Every structure is written in C-alpha cells, then in structure tokens.
Image 1 (cartoon, rainbow, N blue to C red):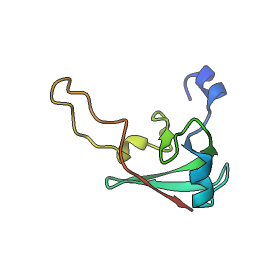
Image 2: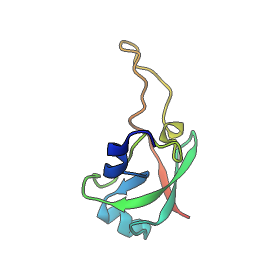
Image 3: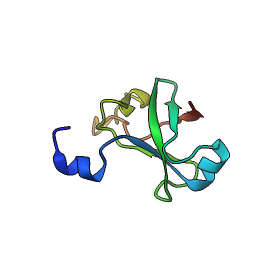
Image 4: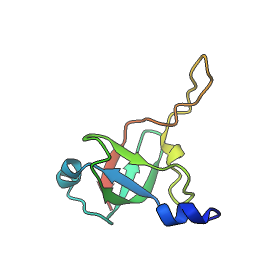
Length: 95
C-alpha cells in the first residue's frame, strides 16, 4: 500500500454486513465470503457493523485484492456522465 495513513485506518478489504443479515447468513467477523453480482464476484472478509443498513452491504473500492468495481454497473448518468459505481444487487455466500 502506498498511503500509510490508510493502512492504519483499514489495511485490508472487508464487506460490512448488518448484524441481522450476518446472523441470517451464518457468518462471523473475519469469515471470507464471496460477493457476487450479475457482472462478477470478489472475495472479502466479513466485518459485522451497524454502519451497514439492514439489507445492504458496503465495501471500499480501492483494494486490488477485492476489485469491487467488477460487481458494479458500467452505465453512466446521461447528464453528468458519472458511472454507477456505488450501487448494485449482490449475493453473499460463505466460502
């Protein structure tokens, strides 16, 4: 990693999952899961967190080991031309 400060804050990728969703999926902190969309899949460790709303998972997008943008839709907003890299439907499976 090139930015030491970011490594201190978060040195690896996690998929943040709401506690209720983690219980339903039978996953624990540190378990490796596969996150799959219609466009691809990545693997990451679980971080159970209230920061993630129920029914939603969150991931950072700057870790080469888990290139989360392979999951997202390459469509662009017609006005701003900004890609839709922030949201997509995914399935979580314990490895």
